Image (tube, rainbow, N blue to C red):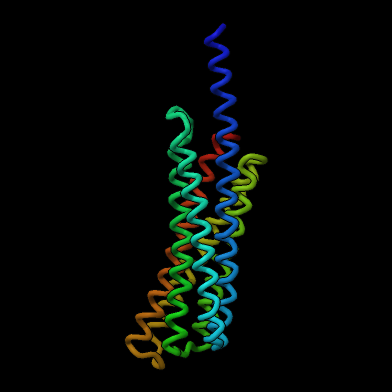
Length: 227
């Protein structure tokens, strides 16, 4: 009888811990979504040549990134204090790692946009629209990731549907990345340094989409366990 009580208590404690962790993941994504939203505004300003607005927006993203990182550290400390037998503990740690990387990559995109603005690089409309489209798709992926996290503890099957949307978005960005890279390399209006800066910007956007997909896979595995 005592063993059955102990096992029941372990199950209850693990369930509470998992719900707390899911809630914390969603809290971490909230500032990341705000980062991505401001990044979308920066992208539109960059395409329109409003360089001063681009430079001013970066400070907000940097501070929001710090907020996400602080939440991530608090959650990691919580995980460390949990019993080693917690099921899916390693997946939660991996998810935190991917979310931390995502926040940093968004900050890196913003910094590179600021660099483009400071260098007064003139982006032709075709290439500008491609970059803006990539950022827009990336923002939609972040929003889907936010919804995926919210559904983990409520409707795991719906979380899996959001995962499919994210994978589709990543494929679209991958295709757009190749088109934007070719446009950059073939541009006769850009010098070598300007091409290098824009190429790095485009590559970082593509890497960010990959990281969103990786975080979504972490959520997918958590959802499958709960289905």
